[in-house]
Image 1 (tube, helix red, strand yellow):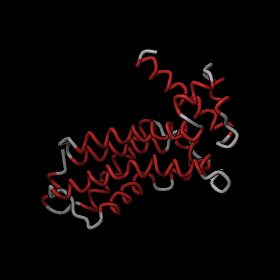
Image 2: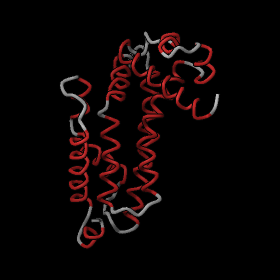
Image 3: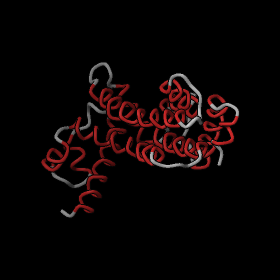
Length: 210
């Protein structure tokens, strides 16, 4: 199979795994379910992903990579800080409030006591693999004199709080729908403005603006 075709096939498998996870939960989802959904052999899934936990680790890693790509771009770039924070906010809100992440989080919570593997994968492959890139970006801003804070990890958590508030919990409870592009843009811009008000002082404020 050619590499572009393999990538498309892999994405289709991950999409199917996410959909079945939403329908049946982690414990009741099988590799055979996923294989049938995409008209593939179970042997192919095991060859590509190793196990059911490996398959869902790939789902979570794919989700996290959308944010990581944005963060890596800004680590190497010189975009105005307010625009960079808004970009990060858009990526985070789109991911964490989207249907795929909600399905994964619901499954991880429901299975946490009896089948904790998904929760462990979610933490290790998602948050713990992505947040350090945001922390490095914030540290870089501090080194350039663009921000003032003592603990970059605390600052990163503050940004997440400003961005999401209780919206992620409300999504998990099913009381609100996924935000549309306009709502995500507003969330990201508002979080960036509020964050800079907290961590930017004096002359540095002018230098964070486009």
